[in-house]
Image 1: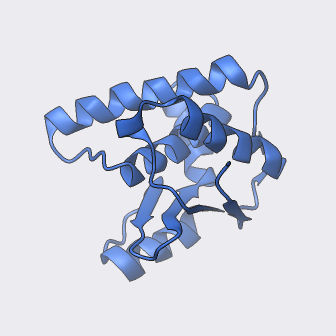
Image 2: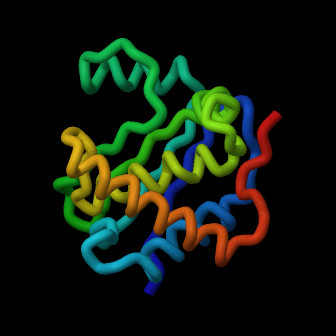
Length: 153
């Protein structure tokens, strides 16, 4: 049975069909190795612009810097956790990293998903494993969804 996914879009710079983002998460649930899968349960994805995600960063992590993704693990039974991402950051970073805003935002979501699976990226060894796993997630995306999920304005 496919997990329930709750999606909130508070960003002013993107539009997307909810079913396409849900399909991406379901593909990760289905195709990633067991040790890379987020825990079972409802998964929440919240998409913001920089100002709102920075406010969350301040409120919960006491850090006033702009960030691309914040992941909240859950201790509540039946709830896997929440991934909060910045669409505005993805749009801005795509230019810097010579990619598309769609790919960048999908990377943020995959990154948050992998954090829920227990991966971290604080030290060099862990960061290397995170980059390898992100690449796997984006390969799953490109092999199974042949169009952009997100449309940026």
